[in-house]
Length: 120
Image (cartoon, rainbow, N blue to C red; front, top):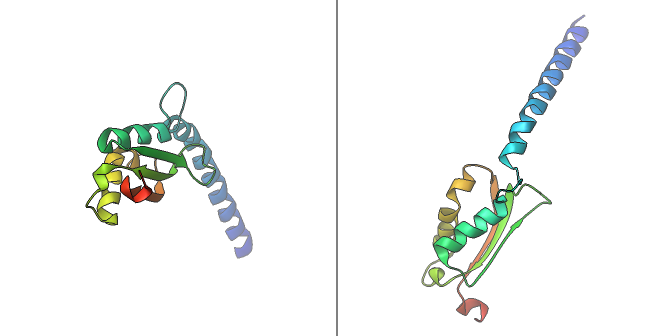
């Protein structure tokens, strides 16, 4: 009897979980919509460019994530001169802070160099 009870409770939980997951799907799609709007990657690129005026910038979506919820950043800027790695990363995070509180779940990697460090 208890096996049947647990099985039916488990089934109900699984069904409810599926309903919640699918009912949230349109909201998630709207948050990552690219219909005429900036993509997350282009928004992050623009904001980093505005703050750090980089010589070279590359923001890419990682893990085959079309929504850009995981990104990686490669940035070469004079703004990094005299700063250690943590300070450089803080500057990048500062530029995309709004996205980190919204559509960007994680920055998987940041490469932040000065022009001199890359031979420019």
